[in-house]
Amino acid sequence: MVVCVPVTAGGLIDLRWGRADRVAITEITGDAIGAWQEYEVGWHALHDAGTEGSHHARVARFLREHHVEAVVANHMGTPMVHMLDRMGVKVRLGAMGDAREAAVRAIDSQSS
Image (cartoon, rainbow, N blue to C red; front, side, top):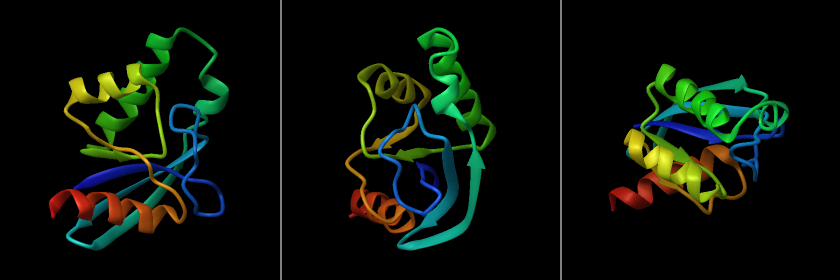
C-alpha cells in the first residue's frame, strides 16, 4: 500500500497534515516499509494563500501524482477527511512519534 505521512525534519510525525511542510511517501507491505521518499510540500505557507478548495486541490493533486492509497496523520479537519474519502484514500488518524514506525503500525493494525 502506498502511504503518505507528514514528517518533521527529525523524522517524527508532523502534527499538522494540511499545513505540513514535508511529507514522506512509502510503500508498506505487511509489516515492512519500502523506499522512503520525502518531499518539501510547503503546505504551511501555501495553506492561506488561496481558498480552502484550492488548497485541497493542491493536496489531492500531490496524492494522485504519487498514487497514494492511504494517509497516516495525527489529525486533520473534517473537510479534508471527506475529500480523501471521496478520492478513495484511506485515512488513519492518531499517529504519533517516529513517522516510519507510525506508518507501519497504522497500516498493519488495519489489516489484522
